[in-house]
Length: 328
Image 1 (tube, rainbow, N blue to C red):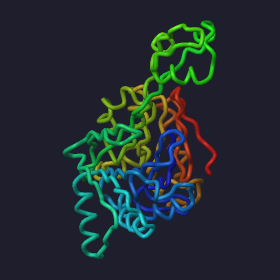
Image 2: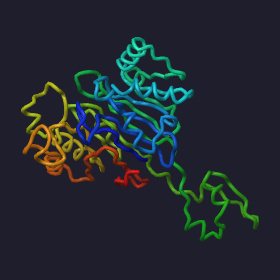
Image 3: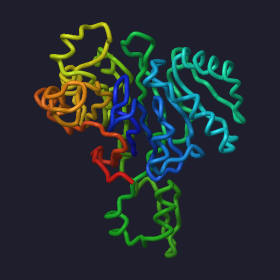
Image 4: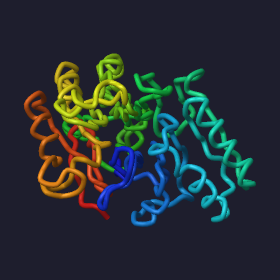
């Protein structure tokens, strides 16, 4: 499973970060999935290997602008590129109202169907070829959801040592056995596939959170998750000054939850623009930087930790190990 950040800033973009968007796809897959679509997302896509033609579905966590203002323009551009395949769009009901309003007032007509799924009414989506998707309600100022992506098909694993010891020749026969077919060898021996298949590995699972001030709401989904991608808008000190009104999380609170839930890999994103890449930049000259978020997180979480940057690509391998890839 692979994912790439198209935006990692909260509220407004910065010189190096756009507002929220994340691309996700299965191993070696052409089609891909988009979680959130802040303003400018389609322009970010132009700087990647992704294509609107191969975009299979869009998941919007909530209707705040830094998560959805780019949606109408992206859909319009897909239409201008002669898309005819239906687009699955999932999110709270307010997403449908937002899109309908824009389409009506701007006379936007799409040459393809929007298949909208209201996750407030139907939180489980099983119709996609690559992933089973589960929506989980979060705590924010408007209805907001996290999306858990669990791979649908887990291939059988061959017991190569046992096959070799039984003098079963490698090649097409191994492929048939891996597909679960019983075979007859050239020497007349009958082979049951089940005798040479190892137990299936655990399906990989990635949770992509929306805005949320209560990470513990993800406790159930986190039990078997390999990766949690969650907002860390503030450090705890700044959150204490800002107060509970915005309903965002601090790095400390996310870290404590991830540690308690025993999540192996944690990726933080959705950083307030007050946290610049280096101290002495931006809003808080001489003040806050992303190093402050990283430092706070490491105090409370000892797993594999990453801070998102725009265009960064990540690979979750079949063993559940997350690594950062070279951006294309």
